[in-house]
Image (cartoon, rainbow, N blue to C red; front, side, top):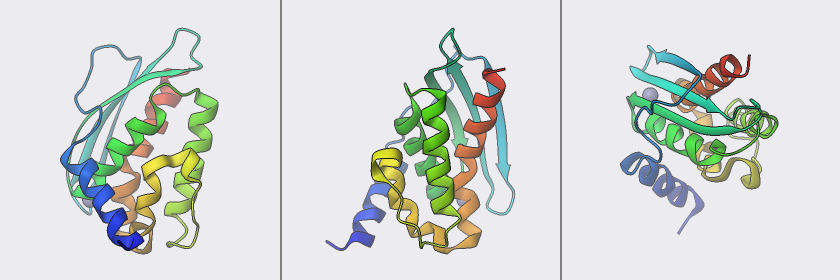
Length: 146
Ligand code: ZN
C-alpha cells in the first residue's frame, strides 16, 4: 500500500472513530474556535493536574469536515497525559509540518498519527482545518495553566 493511501486510511479511521470525543465536566479552561472558510467548529476543555504541569485530559465537542474531526482525535491521543513542556514540543512539531507545504517530515515519536496530515499541508485552504483543534488546545491549556 502506498504511503499516501495509508495516511488517508489513518485519517479516515480517526474521523469515523474519534478518540476522546465529548465534553467532560472536569476542566479549568475552555476554548471555542471556528474556521469560517470551511464551517468547522470546536469547543475544547483542558483539564490539568493540580501542579498545572501535566495534561490529565482534553475533552471536546466538534463539527465539521473529516480533516478537522480527525485532527482533533489525533490531538487527544497525543497529548492526554503528557506534561505541558512536552505538549509544546508536540504542538510545535505538528504546527511546523502544517506550515511546510508538505515539505517537512515530522517526527512520528512526537506527533504519532499526526504524520498522516502531511498531505493536507499541501493545500493552504485545508491547513486551518487541520490546525483548528490544536489551536483550541494551545489556547485552553495556556489559560488553564495561568
Ligand atoms: Zn474543514
